[in-house]
Length: 345
Ligand SMILES: Nc1nc2c(ncn2[C@@H]2O[C@H](COP(=O)(O)OP(=O)(O)OP(=O)(O)O)[C@@H](O)[C@H]2O)c(=O)[nH]1
Ligand SMILES: [Zn+2]
Picture 1 (tube, rainbow, N blue to C red):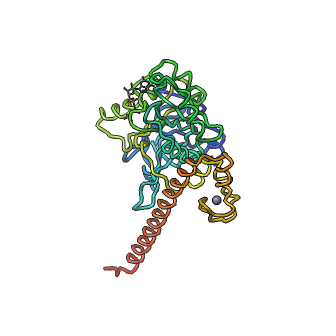
Picture 2 (picture 1 turned 135 degrees about the horizontal axis):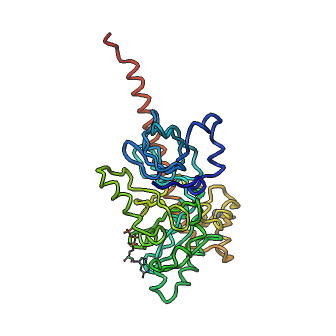
Picture 3 (picture 1 turned 60 degrees about the vertical axis):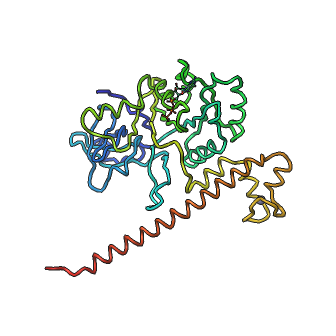
C-alpha cells in the first residue's frame, strides 16, 4: 500500500480552508484515484482507501482528482470538497448536464504532432476549454524528431495566444520527464488531450514510468470489477499526478464564452470597443476588429475561427439551456403528479 503525504497528493490551503472544526479530527481527506459504479478508490496519507458513498452522493458526482472527506474505518465518503478546477464536456444535450472529465487539474497538455495533425482550429478549441476552466494550457508538439523544421510549428502554435507555453519534443526520447518537469512536480496535476495517434499514451508512459494508461484498468479487471469511466490518477516520476482522460479526443464547445474570449484576446479586446454592441465584425462602421485587420494586428484567419467557435458555442449553449428547461419542467410535472395521486389507504 502506497502512503503519501497530503502535500504530495496535491493538498493545499484552498482545500484545508473548507474543513469545519469538527471535521478536522474526525475525517480524513483523500484524493480520488478511480470511480466505479458503486464505490470509489482514494489515496490518502493513511494509504489507499476503498469508499462507499453516503446517501445523497452518487458516483456520477465524483471525479478522478477530486478531494473528498472520508470516515476511513467505515470506508465511507462523507463529502466532496469544492474543486479548484473542473474539466467538463458539454455533450449531454438531452439532459443539459455536463459530464465531469477530471477534477482539480493544474495543467492541460494539449497535444498535437509536427505533421498533418497540426490544426490551429482544433488547438484553439482545447485552449478555449482550458481557459474557461482556468486550467493552464501547454501545447505539446510531438514527433519533432520527424520534421526538419519543428520551429515553424512552434511559431504557429505560439501565435494562437499570448504568453502561450509551447514545447516541441520527441515523445519517445528519455528526456520527456525532464522537459515537462516544470508542470509535473510535487503535487501538480496534469492531463493529456489530443487526437488519436499524436503520442498521448507514449507521453503518459514516459511520465509515469510504466504502462500508465492500461495499468489501473487491468488491475481492476483481475478482481472482476470494472471502472465506470476508465479514468484514473497516476503518480509521475517527478512527483506530480497524471489523470488519463479517454474521451478527450474530439470535444464540442458549450457554455465556454469566457474561454473563447480568453483564447482570442487580441480579437475580444478590440470587439469590446466596436461601435455597435452586437457588431458582427464584418462591414459595420466603427468595427474595431476590422480596423485591427487593416492595421495588421489581427489575423483574418483567426477572426474566422473565432466567429465559428463562438457560433458553435452559442448554439450548443442554447440547446443545453432548452434541455435544462425541459428537464426542470418534467421534474415539476412528475412531482405534482405524485402529489395528486390518490392514496389507497
Ligand atoms: N518518432 C516519434 N514517434 C512518436 C512520437 N510520439 C508518438 N510516436 C509514435 O506514434 C504512435 C502513436 O502514439 P500513441 O502514444 O499510441 O498515440 P496516442 O495519442 O496515445 O493515440 P490513441 O491511443 O489512439 O489516442 C506510436 O507508434 C508512437 O511510438 C514522437 O514524438 N516521435
Ligand atoms: Zn466589430
